[in-house]
Image 1: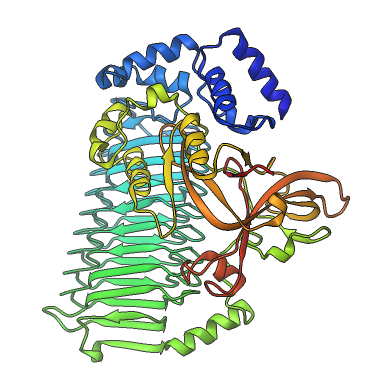
Image 2: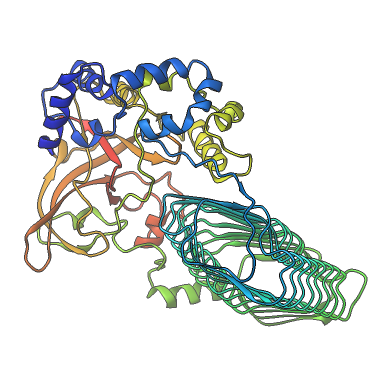
Length: 611
């Protein structure tokens, strides 16, 4: 680690005006001890040369000029920026088979196609960002098949949109075999999906499985369709804090057949919203075979479900049997101007409401769980401890585990964020940083209003502007100087910053070797810093009172050879935490009754007073 820093020092001495050289001097000036400087933090400093730093500092005084130089600024400063993707006016005659494809917009693709098929086998896979748009895809086609085998898989911040997909098509099939699987912070949109079609089938075999955060939206799905068959075999399963919305699903359709085989299963806090589902439809058959089963909490909302539909058959085989109670709302379920409707729930969870549903002749509930029944089911699943299986083993643990010889699971501590660098404070101070200035930020970083970039900036600004909780001191920092200033303002100048050395052992069992109690194991205060998604490296730093900090060698459990050096923090007072915090779901206790420990993940860090 120190060798890396030595190289940085040698390079910095060649030119003392680089941002990194300045940070090294700043550390020596602001930190009172002579302990080794933290290379994992120093190396996050801006990589700009002295000339580049001076040039971009001058440009940042005029935001229009900086925006005009965005590609070179992003490249030189190691920022997260999406490419400016212009429309493609390419004409494709006959069937097309794309093996690899990314970062290009299709203004008009496959419209009016007759029979045949088009396929994309690998579309924007395995990248940091994926920015693609189809303005019109297979519109007015007849008997034409479209297939995406893998779409935006393993992508960090995908931004994909279809303005119209298969609109007014007759016959044929559209298929997404694997859509946005294993992605981080997706923003996926279908503005008009399979509207006004005649006898066309659309299917998603796997949709946003194992995704993290983000939002997905279908603004109009199957609206005014005739004999349309639409299916989602696996939708949002095993995802984390995923938001999904369907506005106008099957509205005014005739003979629709829509099915969700597995929807939101085993997810963490899924939020799903159907604003108008099957309204004014005729002879529709819609089913959810497995809806939000074994997920943690969650919030689902159906506003106007099959209202004024004729001859509708709506079925939920397994609805809302969440691992921990969520919130489900049906506002306007069935009803309206016709009565020959059939609804059924074979198994229905708890903590759900039907606000405007009164005519029980049109619905059947084979099993409707009460609170006590749900709790009994939860205990059976969790082995009697109330432990949520969604929480990764080892993510939270008790302080008693931190002793030599203990074998314990190690969670995946790998950093999933895009690689970025801090900005020099001289540039950062000239850039807007507030929700009220989001429009200016979007102009600088070329972010469209509804894009992933705009959303991630808005979310991070919201977190930074949130009022601190009781006893908390917080600040978002986009430069090393700002982080040093915040940490020393809370803890004083005699401080040390620590992070887990590497990611070895992630997702496996490890053996705890030698353990060191920081500050003699006394309860103390620390400053923890966690990354936020932003174009430049941004950390959310906050004071954490009443903690104990530990260092521990982590060993291979078979050979006992050292593979890592971990840093753990134990929160002694958990009385103000939420009852649904993952720690209690994992360890099976309640706020204030136990301490909770966790490892410091890759690129996160904790500051404490030096020993």
